[in-house]
Length: 236
Ligand SMILES: [Fe+2]
Ligand SMILES: [Fe+2]
Image (cartoon, rainbow, N blue to C red; front, side):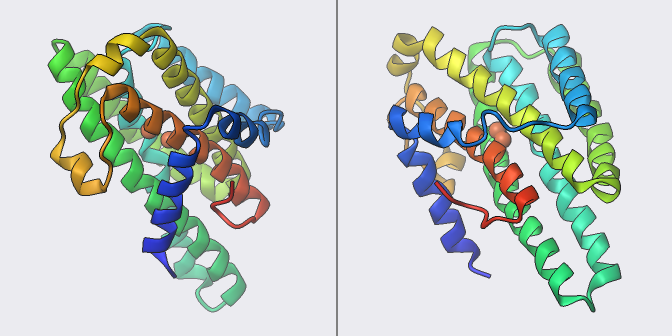
């Protein structure tokens, strides 16, 4: 297990995707991936609920809620794989597969945690946070989503990963739209965060930061399909 170098590889890929041509190419790999009916339905419902509560347009406060929820599947997959390992530790091949998913989950969890911490700070600087809408609802939703993902992973691993594909695709689209809508103002806004520095990112402004986040989401989307296909997790 080489978690530190995997993390560095993820960071390298996220930075490489600042190049629009590379991003287009990387994204195209799974743009036409066919999602099964059940995760498509669940994913559509998830996006519908998000749009109903936080609006269709991207905003700091919507991102804050999205990021609270986005961390959850990675945490629940880790827990689910951990439970399954208790049953299959004597089957080395199965243990290797489960450990690979756990590794991807751990890296993505750290990455999503960085998103939620930094974006929460930015959202608080920009807007007044309503406790019920922007804190309580995402927290409750995250609780139920955790257990839904946990059991879905047990019942049908593919469905759980495909549901995440839908969610990450939506997150990517929202960040992309946000960057296009607010390019000039985001470039004029500085960003200072101790957590971001600790994570190892040093964006020059908010535009730079949100570009990195957008790229992370498309990496998460593609990695979910890599996990289904049993491919090496990080590849451009
Ligand atoms: Fe995220
Ligand atoms: Fe993500």
